[in-house]
Image (cartoon, rainbow, N blue to C red):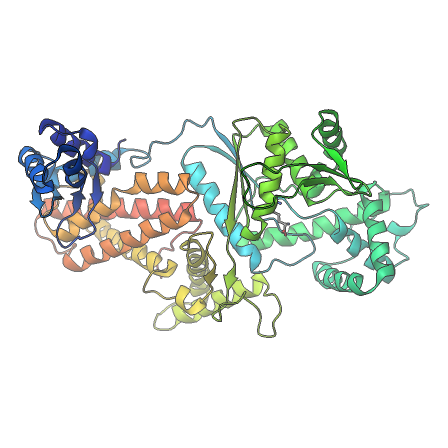
Length: 588
Ligand code: ARG
């Protein structure tokens, strides 16, 4: 369905043409002076140069034609040559009714033939999730949902960091602590125990310990490297131990991501492509893409137009070991083989942008991807504390995501319990839902590439540009609709009539941008655009609510129309929130 703003532009373009000017000049925008008009067209200013006339003369000519238009109730030429426009209630109503009757509210969705892989999450096993993992999860989940709503086939892959030295460190440290474990007995041929010899808390202690130790103790570092090598070359006991590490970690990760309402279709990791690497390396060598440089295997990726130095992409280190690049390239190769995606999107810390530039160039140059496969990097900024520095615990350590979520849940609970009659149980349930919106909206409402300040007190506020404010608005709508139902009134969007007051008109004008907002959020990988839409919607709804006494409205047609508007607002709010990955409770 065409966008409302395009429909208005078309009307004005026709008028330019009828008045003897180029139709392309008739572009309409939302007014930046809402006190003067709702929409505006500045085409007469540009026309003045082409037609050697004063802009106001052109504007007057166009306004003369537009006077008869049923799309506008007000058309005005104002000095020096602006055309100010107010849309007619009937045009607004017609559009809203068409939109409400459409399954996707006027969005031209895709036909499902496009396949997209989203690589997000990216946690490292055996390390607890920290605040840095929040953004990849939250933004990636939202992009996935926006793409799905658009009708694409979307596969979300967590791409675990589960291979390489970090695994060797844990194994080497376990060997120091418990050399008697059967996994280290090279003569053992039986079945290994199904129970892991450690818990997640053990792992969380072992990893940082081993990592710290390797920085000071050369001999230990050598052991860790040897353990990595043994693991990668398939030594049975090491593989079995590694499997335990993965299982214990993944169970914990699932619980954590579940609390964030974040889901992955694939739980693959760097290790998944281990066996793909040799084939990829031969392919790169045989086709002359890779060459040796001081013993390392590299692919040159610099281009003539580069303004900064882009180092070659290293495929294998001089000792033959694979690297982060190697697994990413092999993962691309494997994804192409299995899913043949049209697009792969990486939602990763923006500090990795040069790295991904290398990987993308390498994948293109070596034809690991098709010419038309698009590779996108959505780099996000850091989460900062109120002091403007990376978010830390009070003693300066990295903050575990779990603690952060608990803190926001607790504060929300306190807030919900104060001033409300509610059982603790119910309040706990509700506060989790509301806290999630606070957390996610607090993140998503910022442009992804920007850093933002994590301010719990601001995020959990029921007023202002926050998740809880949106939920509060939605709950208000739900409760009015429930009251109407008690009176036997079923809300139906078909009952929406021409708006008679400014606040109703404003609400409808806000709602109808849904299709262009979603398309824009999709094209620009920008969930914050959906946040802005929701916030505008909540504001427009609340002023409508304060201006009109919905349940006491005496004119039954107007009342039915109000209820229809409520229903449409609710549907659009819930659909939009779902694209952000949170939802509203029944009451709060
Ligand atoms: N595990 C990586 C890290 O902690 C992030 C993975 C990002 N995804 C990727 N395909 N490289 O930095």
